[in-house]
Length: 334
Image (cartoon, rainbow, N blue to C red):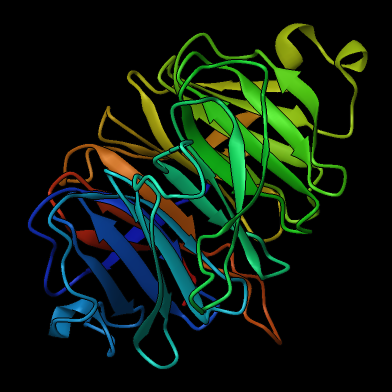
């Protein structure tokens, strides 16, 4: 099988620096965060600013870059985090900033400080997870109130490697955490315990994406590979290092990954300035978009499945080093 994807359009008012995170919401808008400290919302059909958004001055641009973005499944909330660990919750329906937590601030109640790097909203709502330099994950209140950011619990990974990326499974029962040294940790959120460790990468794991049924996890690494993991398997039932499939083809770091809403396709963006689409079942690359014109591809996101009809794997969006958000569609697709 081979697939062709065509450039549809670009964002009308690009960021002034690299796009470090991107998310295509169920409401058919796209959110992007940037090294310029801004978060923007776009109309997917045209690439025009979608109010309320930072394009009109709100939320205000942060003084430092934004490094992590997570959106709720219903498209109402956007959770984002700055490079020094300021976590914010944006209500997209009202346009209001309804939560802010300075994870780097020492409090009178605790001497323990864990500046957040990566953040992830739980699909079940009410909580979010963060990772940082300690190698553990921390669960916080996501309630839009004065309790936003309050620490509820923390779960150790057993390693003190920097936590690069955390992501909840779609069913909200598990949390995956990747490290700077290549490990991937799977936590059970019902028992708040570590249940599996995968050592299938040799270098920093930059991005993670779950399959829609929460059974598979796709990872992207600086070792130029993507690796598929079956989280239902115990370590004794998988190949050495925890991999059930490996995808090779990028010539430089793989910076971003996403799985399609139907679970059939993987999507990756790389420092080699290409985007690749992978057939998960065939374990093969089925499309390569060479040199997108914007430099390194820091972020990719599939279009979600529309709520009432149709499959959503025919289009995706990418964020590049040049600050431009780009929309792509499958040949013959709307």
